[in-house]
Length: 404
Image 1 (cartoon, rainbow, N blue to C red):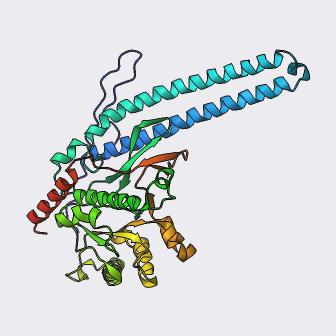
Image 2 (image 1 turned 30 degrees about the horizontal axis):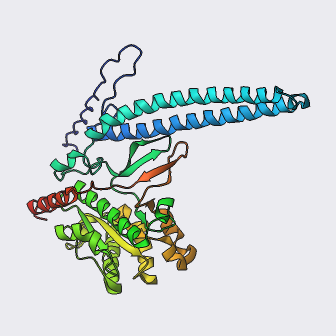
Image 3 (image 1 turned 90 degrees about the vertical axis):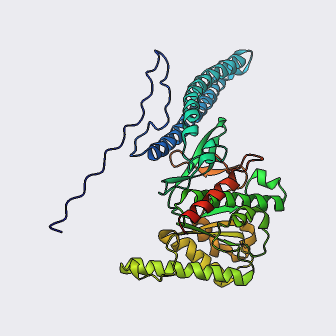
């Protein structure tokens, strides 16, 4: 418009904190939030991803050095023992010992370098973890005790921790961007991992649902009041115990849907929402949406899939998984893939479209740099803690204050 004044350019980002000068011969002291970014949340997010990459590459270098040392020892032994004269007397023993000594020296130097890098990363993690905002923090972080429902959406959400066997106590938060770009699948199968194979099936299914409840509660706690709704499908009513914190706090969009009729009703409601919002977006007519349509983000938690689902319901669920995230409808599914084996390859696209996480520790996630198999640790509430109930109570209070 000719009379419209140009908007002011965005303010430059605040400079990140700078570490104190290092003593001669020592590494600089790490500082939380010293990565690039326009806000502290973004700097912490980038710093965590930097730690993730540094750990992946440090371990890759160590493993490569160990492999090289083993390969070199094998080559030296082959050369030494290829001469028949070295197979008689002590020459062969001396060749073996010399090759092992060289292998051990190379391995020791590689381990020394790795320990130095791991020590620096551990020191950085020690200052970063206490500085994390609630969306990035573990449930044992004191930040939750003073948590207030934000008025703006954070840029990421913590789903658990990752670690490698070289140092299991060095944990890297697993962060995903918000809004979610894909659904999640909490694998309740006993064949999912070695730890799951040793557990009772009922106990594992309960743990899987408890994990899903923690993810749903965290999402509720980081979205502005009234801008995130949670729907639950529990066909057989078997998840009443794990769902109790959400039900008692009154933060669900409705009672957990049970039976075939309940499943059909919830799926029809969310399918209609996806269809209407898609049409409005394509037509550029967002103002024409029905007044009763909730345009906030929606999360559908499905327990014990595919029990209670007929072919039509399965088709609708696949549609929501594919088309829902782009228009604010997300899926969090608790399922054992073996239970759905009767569908064969028909459901393969569904499983591939979801981020698989586990209710117990399992090394099934790979990093995007070198492809290590990282052990995923699901989120847990400290024993005896009431943090979950406190957070959900804060969600309820914020909704009432906002008139939602």
